[in-house]
Length: 262
Image 1 (tube, rainbow, N blue to C red):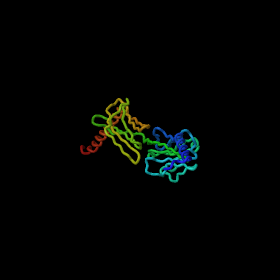
Image 2: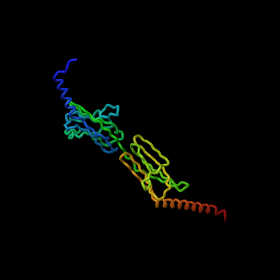
Image 3: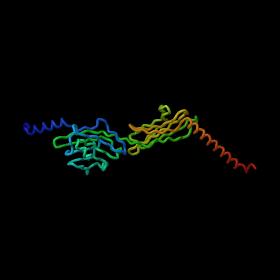
Image 4: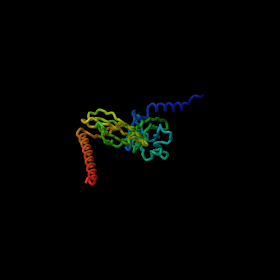
């Protein structure tokens, strides 16, 4: 094998020096995005140099699809071969490219956007890349508590349900002191890319408020149903309804039997 010529050695040393001097940097931690909102996927060259004349490509590492998420080349965006689900939702800020910032703006985030992304930057003499981990959260509907009657011991049956979450949410019951209550039944369902959850519980304590809390990672929704006064009022109303129904039943029976007793 022949030895490299002086020109080749010079080129190799130049590339080595450039590679050691510059690097593409992404976030050390996952990027958390909210479904329906916009997100920024950070990517830049350190120390800062202009990447206006370079190739900038964003693509998914966790998809078999070889199409790009976003491609910038020859001073313009070239997204004719872009993954279909990203059409019209990606953007590079061209003014920021002059500062070495190739961060990608992703609009109207979807649950399907969750995954590993690679930011690849290439010039004629150098290239490097960085990985960005995107985690998506979808905030569901506020939890709804429904009253499902009383048991034989006077305990109040409650159900709490919430839909439209991602990833799978945690639901818990809490009393007025913030103490967690153990649910009797738990139901979880997944519809396409969203989760719904429903828990039921029987409340015997009458001196406390009851909270139903649903949460994922950084988001939480909560519903409050009952205090001691409301519990007593609910019990009284139910008893009054039963007595009224009984009185109406007796009155109707008496009217039916009256002709026969005459």
